[in-house]
Image (tube, rainbow, N blue to C red):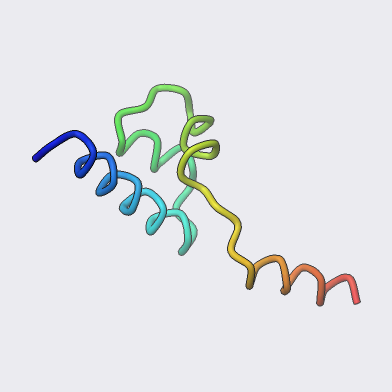
Length: 60
């Protein structure tokens, strides 16, 4: 498997773990990162538009 496909699979897996609530530190450990989740947050965690809308609704 070439590097780009491997990275894409890693990105997809990390993103899908984060959405249902996996902790950043757990995803980082699973990926082999030793920074406690900083890189995971920067690279793999994305804000979904539905989350932003839900926050807007909370604010009224």
